Figure 1 (cartoon, rainbow, N blue to C red):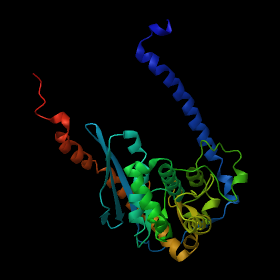
Figure 2 (figure 1 turned 180 degrees about the vertical axis):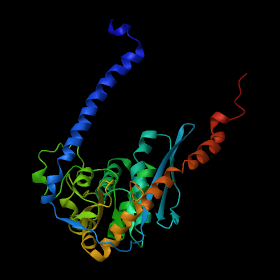
Figure 3 (figure 1 turned 90 degrees about the horizontal axis):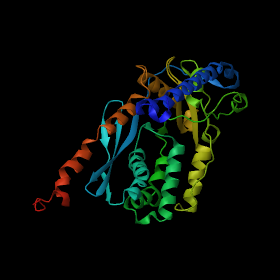
Length: 343
């Protein structure tokens, strides 16, 4: 049968069925790689968490909603902080409106970071940022680049740039020792004492969290190390925007102050990547209550500590804001003008 005479559904699906077969082989290869990782334990400084009373935890997250209303678009941002008692603190509503959808889309990430930093910088107890410190630095660098390269006229980028950079919100967040970062995304394997032993691993298929989830036993964590030792990629602070003293302060925080560890609380869990001040991660009176809290919050097979999950879940339920702006305001667009009737 000629290719063009085959039914369209068959022509569409056949290549994808074949592709899925190759994908399954890749997944099996990935499982085989992880199964061979146990011998890496001898290369790592692995420690056992000491049982103790868990610390109180909070988490910050933000929702970004795009609302088309006629030919204009509104971007709505809502950040909130949740603690493990369920108490929720909402940040102020943020709205940016315009006609050019592409220009507005460039402001989504800087505005979300701006909203989250506002709550993180004011936290007075251990609070999880639902990202990594590296991602936050890359996002603020990106905001500066977009502003300096013609984005000054974009109301969203302009607002985020001035709040994060000129008014110092990003640096104040970094200087707050209560902020820790726990990203749900994975990194390429890069750990001091481990790199020489992972040459046989396909780093495109094996992440740090899954690899260490295979290596570590329940209750174990890695010796905390500097953030620059445990993170792949190059580090840099955007030369524009910040003053010289601010750049030096940010550089010092990332290269000398921040640290990272991995902790596996349960047999069924992957390893959690925890970023915080290295001095705190090395202080057992601070570290053990934090690990106890992570273990307690994930005992019911949660993929993240309860406050982090609740913050993420709550922000994703805020789509009612989109309906408020969309459904209620559409009658005020020219398309809804009752005077414009068909004859």
